[in-house]
Image (cartoon, rainbow, N blue to C red; front, side, top):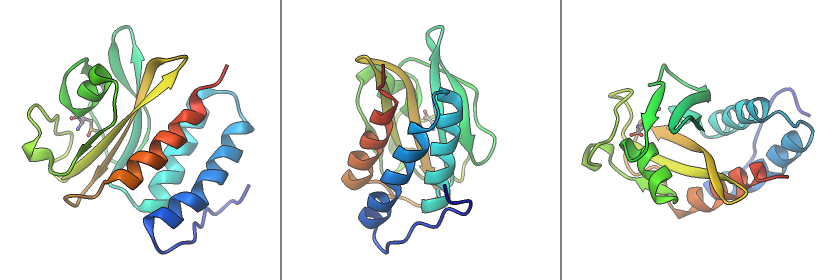
Length: 158
Ligand code: SME
């Protein structure tokens, strides 16, 4: 594995297309979920220079902060609360172009302007969500949704 992750590509699509096989290779070499979540955050964060990239895992009926890259974040989120808790409840990816317009958005940082949350399934159950925040409005679209869903599907093993 490359020590310095350099993802070529000028478009978002190209970056994801180049990044995906690398993520797949890194995950296939390790079984520990926390280690794998940590590397996925790092690779996404470094490639796209996001503001915050991290996982929350479902533990005892709440989302609990897990591996992430970026500033300090809130540690626990209840089902149905914020973008993360809503994506968990609705069992689908949520794209929020402007967080100020999302009722109930949990502002871990006032610098975050747009967000995407992708549920992570294992055996048809959500066991985590991937949350990515951007300092710009309208950062995330269907390309992010498609690729991020493909990336988190790599956790659906056994
Ligand atoms: N904004 C999220 C909370 C998590 S932080 O962005 C890291 C939400 O509304 O669920």
